[in-house]
Image (cartoon, rainbow, N blue to C red; front, side):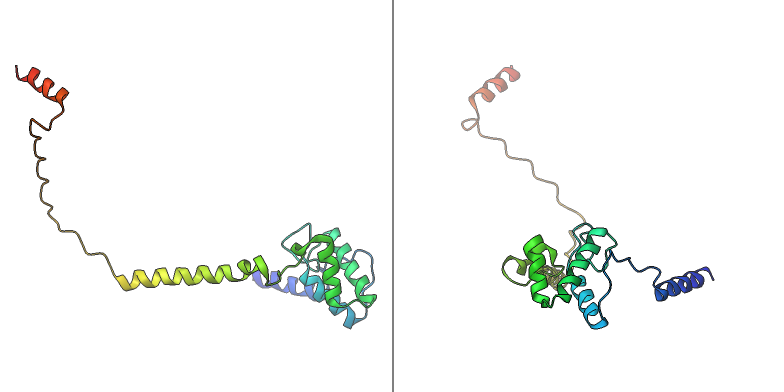
Length: 165
């Protein structure tokens, strides 16, 4: 019963816009342009939150960045020009999805290579089967042969002579 009430409260709150982040100060554009602003905002990383896009972040810096995107869209800039604007100011780090070129291929292909390597290891272990069991009784180790007097250390020979007396 409590879970149903909580779910209903959250759904009503989201549908009425109570939980939407507040805008920093700029007015939303017409719906077609505002959709472009939100799409671009989802591609750019918030410098404060670092794990969120500027469209999802509640920080004031993200709001200011989203306002800048809104300003550039209303100025007639293309999506790539807006991305380039933010890359020039913050570096390629600002993109939530890095371009698949150069060193960034490691980001894109690294997880796939790790999964394939793990699959190969698992396949080889399963194919090899269980280890054969060791015999229950192991023979007692044989006594090491005593060294001959001519190969023995001279100091050790002297000690043995003293002990024998």
